[in-house]
Image (cartoon, rainbow, N blue to C red):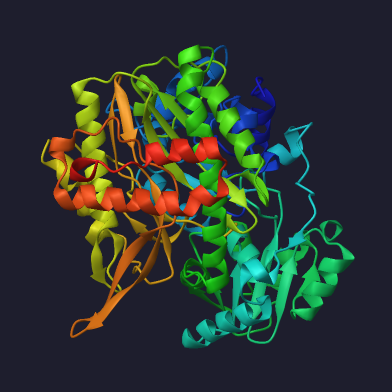
Length: 592
């Protein structure tokens, strides 16, 4: 929408001086279906992160460093001023509004996509500048003439051999948690929570096997709100068998307004302003985090077996890719996008492959220093037989989700590149070797991944690890490993990534990542201790390692990991690929 005058007329009709367009949807998802991409519609900027703000006589868009170049190009010729987040000269959205709006002005948001928590925080910040916040309907519903429809892909049943537990049993576990909290029901908005709880999957969301829906679970009823046209007779029969009633997606607000119990749990970080307002006035709202993410994070035996199968298939695809890569780069003609396409094609050959699990990060040279870089036709560059390639990728298989990063030497390296690569690897290994008490938080382990680089005055600003779903979202909580305090405990059965990195602007980036399973280590006087088991099966490039920087136990861990990779993958490979893997996993150090 290049002409903002229709929106400004809409603002005047609603007595608003500005409107904020976030990158969210009603389900607070990481990936947003096209129907809810109103920020892209109003601004023309299609990056995955950003916020657009339009006033009666101005417009601005905030985004992070990943998209500075792309945003400048896409906003060219429009009214939108680019606001580069985290730069000292860049005002926040509220600071900018306070500069350009008269005191007493009213700012609008869409109550259908902004959470209760976001509403309260924004209200508080605006009030400090004598500005008011109001939630209205979605202006795009009136003004976006060719707006994409809501996704309508069919829903599928996730077989019990992969899910490991029937939906009705999961629902009973949720009810048990509700009783502990002395509440009668919970309204669920997170799509991955609903997919896990129902053992259903869809393809409504990019990279995530989810379907647009809500769910209401009480102590004696469960209702799934979803487009009935997406539900086959088989799925309808399945839902009935599992004790789940089926109602239209658009009747969720009616379900809340007709809620008959004395109280209900709503997560203010996930429930929208509009939906929370539908709860009857005489119903007590318990604002509390949903118990489902913590339940979902602990994998059962079937899910763990699925991960192992998925990792073997992913490993086969990665071995074939890595064997192909260096000769292809040396021959010329390969770019960041072309190698992404090659890897995706090799994964697609594997049984039960469904999709990628996130948009691949293939950053060569200086692009590797952009933490969440995604190559576009405008930024795509050719690969040369020198320097480092950072490749972060993953796949959705029906039996498991994968997430892996490897940094690969394409040819000769500088001493600085080799040092940084080795420091990252040391951090990865130190965290991978950790033994720790059950219930420790990820924050308490985070320094293990950073210690070696800290001794060289280096650090990284992203998290060190996140949960991974079981044929669900590649980013899953509530547990994380990161510097800032994350209280969620680490428990046996959880998956978590291990991905330290070093990024030097204009030079290079290094990251090494495995997905790990938290397992039992020992019991003793001080309780249960846990450890990490690597699930990812792929060689770690030994060419860039400065061996003199590695401790003996770090070398031993790497050699053991490589033996494990070879033992697991070699039976699945042909002779040529197996020989390449044998060389790629050859021991280093005294064992070489």
